[in-house]
Image (cartoon, rainbow, N blue to C red):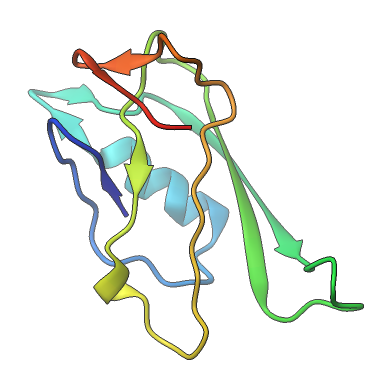
Length: 110
């Protein structure tokens, strides 16, 4: 996981099946000058079943709720070269961004 421009904040490599409590710890430990970049978070992990499948194929959907930090939060991203396996994908969406949503003066993409 990695945030977008203009400043990058990075965690260590995260396993595909990381426990929600461990992802919470990772995100809450990322700091900038002793301030938590993402603040406190709630994490929900649920099995992802593609609409073309009838059962779980091993993927997850993660929902991250930022509970203590107001304002704009750095956009999340991933480092593609860190994804290991066949047919591996990661999609990241910012459900509450709008056209005037910016982080450090630069627009976030939806």
